Length: 398
Image (cartoon, rainbow, N blue to C red):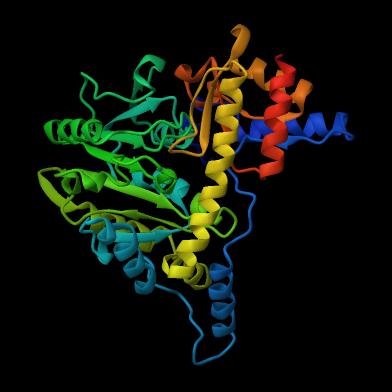
């Protein structure tokens, strides 16, 4: 008889967003005449940029001719995309990240979950709370010791380096779910902590293109010394609408070394070995579409997409504040972190909004103990739906 991984029994009964979908489906079935507006999961609603589509159409045509057909691609991604990322996302900002430090994948979710495979089981992992569930669930599956860093309202939900030792630290800025960002001094403190503890920072920067304020780091590698203690994750899902086409990447600097049994190994080479064993590479067609993001036309179209979601975030944030609600986020991130009114729990607020306003959000309790009493709204809906949703929320709690 084969035995299952008993660590799965330590997880919550189901993935947060699967639970939400079940409740929403039941509501729709019972109320077929009501239009439900979702400000819940972070799925985009606008179509792919035309430049990306044109590039993918051309790539499809290439696959139909023997002289341009491509089979298996490089495990780490095609050079044309990694070169574009190196120049467009890093060197243009004065950050020296080489193409061979970039690994193309099907998105940040998979990378942040799978990166644990190159680390030993007995590493101590520090995870912020509230937190994106993938960070904690994948480490519970791996039977690692997880320690929580509480992110409190009075500190703007920013995580502070803890007094305890950790070998691996997950950070997310702009943050999902709270919409907070880490300043340069805050990141410098984290890099100092990592060096002191010989720890590795796993830095999720999937939402960096939503940063609108000057002085906020777009990459942890803007911090001196970070290349020897950090891995960065990014995604094209929210920036260019690739949630359905799937493409992202991680950066593992060659300076980052890991140790085991008295031996030292480059994390970069370990991850390449992992990918060559467990991953056959992102589709050539998708990678051509992603590379088009870095053309002048692609940049213009992506900026227009981001600006539209930023406007939605402004509508939600300012509308709720004007109506007397307390909320943060929505300035440098597509997420608004709403404080539950009237002493409601986050799941009670979920039910209230669904039943009274036909609006869907995400209960803060699904992001950890510190998320209780808060509620996440996203700016990825259409503008008209976003305006209508805010009106409905105001009316439901007037």
